[in-house]
Image 1 (tube, rainbow, N blue to C red):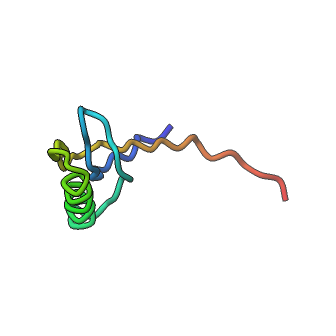
Image 2: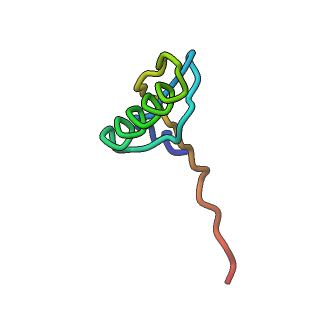
Length: 68
């Protein structure tokens, strides 16, 4: 089996849990962070969210021959 592919992705987190989609571009996650903070302030809440990274691991099995 091949070695797993590991990449870092970004998200917005609250209380140690991701609350937004995982994205590859940090700038995209920063924009999402600002949007969430703004919405929390509009709801009279203190923004308690942070920009976070997550290690995404993908593993592929060994190739299996296919009869055509």
